[in-house]
Image (cartoon, rainbow, N blue to C red; front, side, top):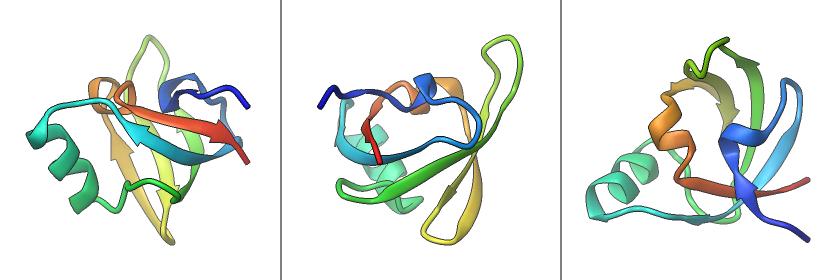
Length: 77
């Protein structure tokens, strides 16, 4: 299956996190938010004009900026 950035998912789509492409700070920040490999994530709403994503992960809703969302690679669930 193809892996692609979380930012490419559309509203309502779910993916499984495969990897995080980033340095220590980005990886730690994402892990602190619960975004780790093998975690299911759902895009609830994409803001227009490359704005942030509203996502659901581990039962919580989070807003994730475009920059961090581009570092999270997923495969469709």
